[in-house]
Image (tube, rainbow, N blue to C red; front, side, top):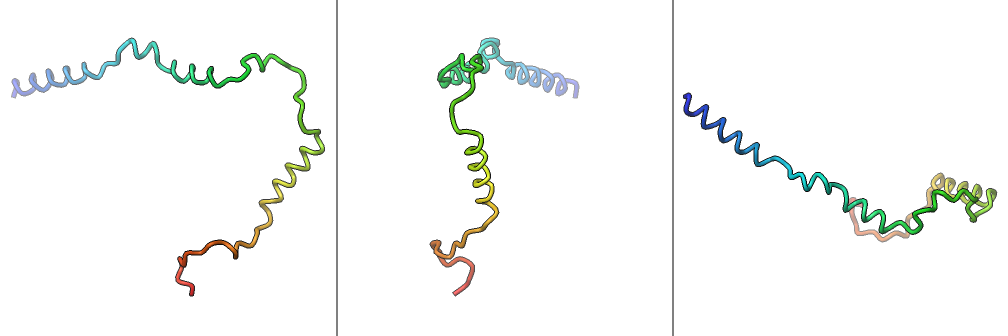
Length: 90
């Protein structure tokens, strides 16, 4: 019994020793994501520019948003949709 316990402890120690991570991987963890984000940034200094953004005037933006919200309140008829006969209705 004692030999079995020692053998199991040795196997557990060796198994857990193989689970250790490499310090090299720890140092480089996340570097690929940071590099990809940096490569996809068009203008890195844009957050320092405090001038107003050119675009829609407030009234047009509010009207567009209101139309967008109202588009979900009315349900359109989908009778012309392609039907493959699911549901048993003939």
